[in-house]
Length: 488
Image (tube, rainbow, N blue to C red; front, side):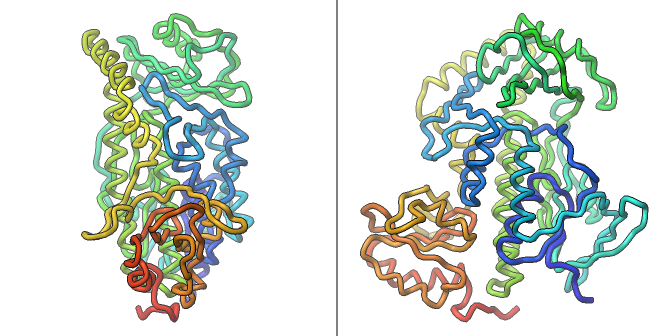
C-alpha cells in the first residue's frame, strides 16, 4: 500500500513539533496527529535550558522565544551559575510551554508539516514496509493512515508505547504536587525561589508577563491528582515554607499532578520510535524533561531524513536509541537526586544538604560541572575508539570567515552536515557531497578540521595533514556514498 506520508507523529507537544519541523525542513513529508482539538495554555514545562536554546538558534527560532521569557543566569537555591557556560545563552529561560509550542508549530507549518487536531490514535500495526495508524476523529469516525515510519511523542500515557507492548519500568517520585500561575504583591526572595522544609517545598519562577509560576507540595496532605486544589492550601504551604505567601492572588489556573521516574527499555521497535515523555519521564527538579524531549527529536529527525532520502542505511536509525537512551538514564538520575535532596525530612539532613550546596556552589569547577550537566551543554555521545577528542561532543558556536553566516550555528540552519576547515584549506573534498554537506572556514587560527552533524554534534575531527587524508572517509561514513544513494 502506498503511504499517505513518510512519517506520522503521534502527539503535538514540543517534542513532536520539533521533530515535524526538522523533517519538513529536510523535505520529508510528515503529519502530527494531536488528540487535543484546541491549543491549551495550561502547561507544566517552563524552563528552556542553554542547549535547547542553541538548537533553536540553529533553526532561527531562539530570538523569538527569548523575547517571550525571563533569562535567569543563576539558580542560587541549587548552587547553579550559568554565566560561565561557553554559550551565547548562559542562562535558563523561564517561559510558558505554550510559547515554545507556538514558535515550533509556526516553523513546522511553514516548512510544510501537517498538524491534525482532534485525531486520537487508537491502534498501530507495522509490517516490513510501513506502519498503519488507526485514528478516531472528533466526530467519532475512524480511519487508517499509512506511513513509512511512526514516532510516538504522546507523553507519559503514550498510546504508541502501549500498542507496542513495551513496559515503562520505574517508580513514583512525588505525588500531590500543586501548580498554578498567580499574581504577587511582594517580590520573592530570589528571582527563582526554591525552598524546602519539613512542611514541604515551594518553587516560584517569573514569567515576562507579570505572572509567576508556583509549584507547592504539602508533605502532610497527599491527595490523588483528581482531587480539586484549594488555592488557600497553596498559600498556606507557601507561608509555612517562606514565612509569607507574598500576597499571591488571582490564579489564572491551578492543578495537581504527580511525577514518576520511568524509562522505556528501547526507543525503537522496527519502524516505530518513542521520544520525549513517551520514552522517559523524570521528576520536575532541574526542569530537564521538555529539554530532553526536544533533543530526542533533533537527534532522530536527521537520521530519519537520511534513511528516507536514501543516502544512509537503515542501521543508522539504531543509533537513535544508542545515543539517546543513556542521556535519558542520566537525566533520571540527576533530576531524581535533586528531588530527593529537596524532600529530605529530618532537620539534621536538611541542614547538611544546605551546607553541602553552599560548599559546592563556592567550588568553581564543581559548580561549572553541575551547570554544564543541567543545561546539557556538556552532553556528549560515544565516539569510536581512536577518534579525535572532539568527536561526539557539542560543536561550539565559533566564528566563521567570509560572508554571512558568520558563526557556526547560523551555518547549521539549512539542516545539513557542515565541514569546517582551517583558513587557507581547499574545500574541494566535499564536491561530491554538496547535496548533503556545506563548507565553512573557521574564523580564527586552527589546525583542526571538523565535520558537524545536523544536530550540532561533531561527527569527526582531525588535526593538520591528517585531515586531508581522512575527510573523504569521514564523509562516506557519515554522509553516505558520493552518488547519494545506498543499497538497502
